[in-house]
Image 1 (cartoon, helix red, strand yellow):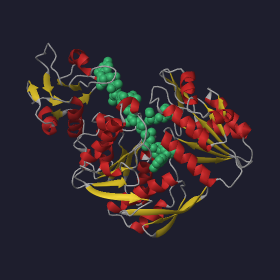
Image 2: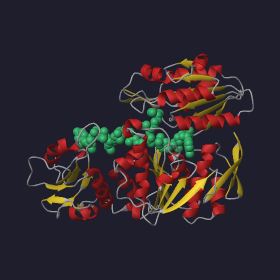
Image 3: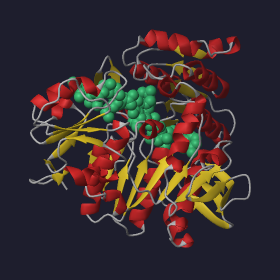
Image 4: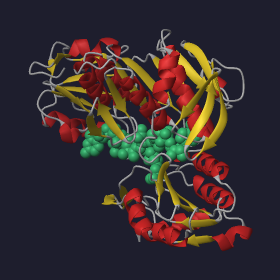
Length: 489
Ligand SMILES: CC(=O)N[C@H]1[C@@H](OP(=O)(O)OP(=O)(O)OC[C@H]2O[C@@H](n3ccc(=O)[nH]c3=O)[C@H](O)[C@@H]2O)O[C@H](CO)[C@@H](O)[C@@H]1O[C@H](C)C(=O)N[C@@H](C)C(=O)N[C@H](CCC(=O)O)C(=O)O
Ligand SMILES: Nc1ncnc2c1ncn2[C@@H]1O[C@H](COP(=O)(O)OP(=O)(O)OP(=O)(O)O)[C@@H](O)[C@H]1O
Ligand SMILES: N[C@H](CCC[C@H](N)C(=O)O)C(=O)O
Ligand SMILES: [Mg+2]
């Protein structure tokens, strides 16, 4: 751990392949940071090439602020005698190994399970965390909604934190006696080497569909990013993949880990079948054993199956696992249901990709008894993959009787531009059922005022989020809060 004496630089570099050191490795590093604004005396400053700027520009500043060592890809023109420079081909990758060493390799002290895929990461990680706690283990969780060490909640800023924050959190978990940690592995995290140097006991692949092409540019790159996680798994780990997803096999093509599969459609190590699915619960067969779950929807059948598989692969008793799983509730903002006194059903869900929206709406379609009206309120995030905008509007129309298009974190874009791009996906025949209400609160109120008893409202895209991000400022906004108010109105 970080202490007054710090860590010997040469020890920190032991996992880094062929670093070129200018100066002596025999100095003590008190902390590591990739942000010059956080450099203090005795820091190791890591120069990262980012999307907005290049950390190499801040090397001079970092040494003025007291950095005793600099990790970089290119040496600065002027070297300071009092500073040690370590040159590596990829600073982001090296930072993973250094962060791990700085915190005494916490991932080796726990059973660390990573979950990757376009949708379902938070759900699976949270279910695993809840399950293993129920089975009596001390556990940690790293997720989009929040990080958690046993009962202590630590706010999350990313789905997968940067390598330094990540190792610091894992170290805290190990220190508190956690035996297990469950974390989401985003595709950004793989590409940016946030997970380099970590020791995983297992990896889970949920699915891959359209998202984040603003960052990865092509679908192929996005697949490669996710596959990168399985490529790095050690031989001792398991790689549990959803083989109903067409890319499931590709994910584990080059992995050294033991390949295991789950499926609702075909033979697999963990095979499930949905017997019935209603608002009250889901009845399934899991490896020939019948079980009733509180969480519902086909997508959750996949999530539960992967959780069951992972737990069994970690040596847990299958029956005990199913008993505990059947009691679990959905994580915050994942198909969360609200029932008004007049019996209007409203669902808040974090579906913010075409695939997630389609899954949720298909689930709702299955749950309908007959003449209920389905009203969907949905928007798309600003400064994010624009290709999903018309697709999500089209999907909302396909499955709903009424669609209200609204704003979802416009960030630095004009909300009306985003809405116009969404509208391009609406087939002319559906124009009549669609309304555009940029103000999300108004949109939710409108949906609730139109709904009659038994109708189903879906509020999609923000789930657990408690803000609306506009021009760099996060204004308090909570779909659930507004919904409760609107339903009582
Ligand atoms: C696109 C992306 O992933 N960006 C992340 C990245 O920032 P960046 O590459 O833009 O960094 P930059 O601003 O160019 O700066 C480059 C370097 O210079 C340094 N710098 C900069 C200024 C200065 O004065 N001094 C200085 O040293 C910065 O600290 C940085 O190390 O590195 C930062 C530090 O780790 C992250 O906070 C930031 O996440 C931003 C906020 C973000 O929105 N990320 C999203 C897209 C993201 O990561 N999402 C995934 C998946 C979400 C999902 O589940 O779907 C996630 O894991 O959360
Ligand atoms: N296995 C699944 N397959 C498809 N859709 C799913 C699955 N699980 C959940 N979903 C849908 O996707 C939404 C997001 O789920 P979840 O938060 O678990 O995904 P995530 O992968 O963590 O997303 P993010 O990339 O934002 O972190 C849910 O609200 C639900 O609509
Ligand atoms: N982690 C995802 C979440 C998107 C959620 C949606 N509400 C949005 O803001 O687009 C992202 O940052 O792309
Ligand atoms: Mg998530």
